[in-house]
Image (cartoon, rainbow, N blue to C red):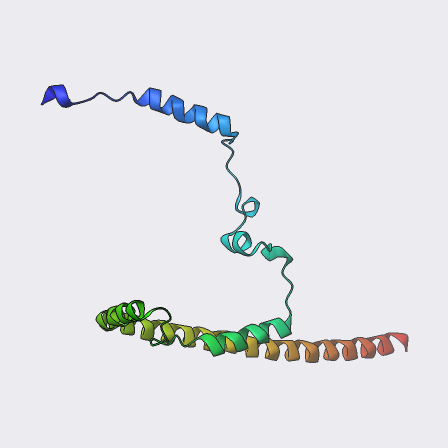
Length: 150
């Protein structure tokens, strides 16, 4: 049994790894969080920092999400007769596991949409309150200026 054990030269392997890293030009500097693109930025190609709030976009996304939050289990199956038959059989065999998952996902989607809608309404209320407060501040500033000018 002892003659089957191979010795591994860890230093040789590490040296090969270091050479590969050096050949690729990768440095050992640790990047900060603000220097690395997020997954969202990489997937969409749009830096999040450059995103601008647009109420119309928000409402459009909310309408789309509300319309698409329910995932139906039964959808028409396309293809040849054999392919359709096999897919229907598989769907029926997997229904006991997939339907509860679908129901939980639909429930989560619905609650997420409700949260987003609540946040949008809250933002609108806060915006209205901010406008009212700005009007009060302007009125108070004109009163202060009038008192100072007397």
